[in-house]
Image (cartoon, rainbow, N blue to C red; front, side, top):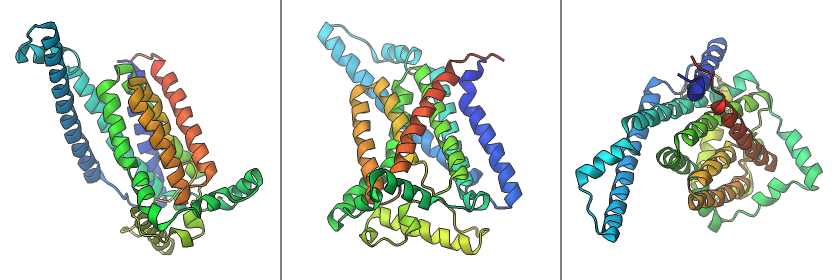
Length: 328
């Protein structure tokens, strides 16, 4: 088997080993365990099965339309056998399920790694970023943009920001179901790399982000899903500050780099390769998320720019790794 096809699994394996080692050293139990991973896997598999059915139905309707135009007939059984030999082959489905399993486990390991941030590196470097931003732009750009948030717009921008998780799932399914095998492996490799390289950067340069570094900001009091999320994460941070080994809270705060932008960056690249219209929609979502992250003060401008750079770097690294054929 070619090792370049197993790069996502190899990266996940090393990330898991690093987490187990760090957790053993600091003595903090896992926030998410095997049960959560299995729940994620079953959830993803159900959506994948539903997506396969939708794609199969669309393909059948397309074949019916083509038969009518050419005044020919294609029986359902013949169409099904043809589909199983091409787009819905057992080997392709098993490969997709393998990659979805890797993605589900990636999130479990990532969340557990992120929970260890204050125990690995308790420093925060927000003030350096604030000073850098003031030096480059001449004024605190993030704070200025955050002050533009209003009670009327808070709900809208909250919807944009929290749609990230649905967007991420849709992007994975679209690339898996419509992309070529090479594109699929490349995408999943970049997807796994972006989370784990991102957490390494966080370990090296931990930041809180403007909303948590200067809590509470007056303009962030407007009721919204994001506001509730920020209050919950801040409360968990305070509880863990009092007792780092508390088990009913998780440390989920980080600023640099922004994975809310890094993931759409790499997803947009692969979605454009699959379908230009879907890719264009992804670009629009990325731009809206960029602004939403600033007005809610989740991130500094530098966090978002670093997220774009991280996404592009992971694309280049994934292309290199998946094209290097090492056989075992």
